[in-house]
Length: 166
Image (tube, rainbow, N blue to C red):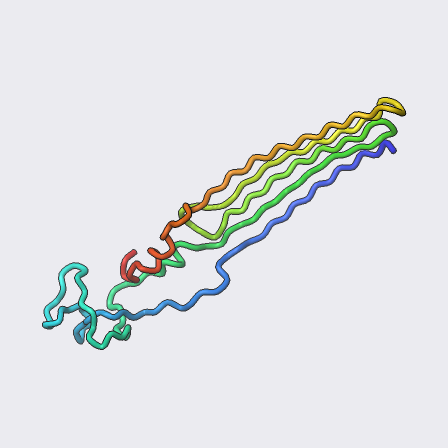
């Protein structure tokens, strides 16, 4: 009776892609002995009008710098959560107030995704007499969510970009 209790808790963590397949350093386009892109007649290619190698194999090494699009898109995300509460009980009155906040950033570097949540809860019980008691409870929560639209082909497009394009 008459005890006030204060509790504070926090948690944190990290998230990242679990497994990755190694990226190939090769392509399927026709090249000459100097690893320059050529057409089917052996002429150098201007621009990106690459011609597929007749053998159809991805066995020609890129002769230009390449980029890891998955590494550029994904990183390490953080998760943070904190809660605090204060409560007191006495012969006639009990109350409890809880505050909470959480933030999960997700593993995407861009577009930035994740969830933020903030909430408060209050409860009050009061005994007026032997035959009457009052109770009041309220809860408010606000959540902000940043997601990629359903049906988005952003991941498919990331895999389709040739490794020589940054």
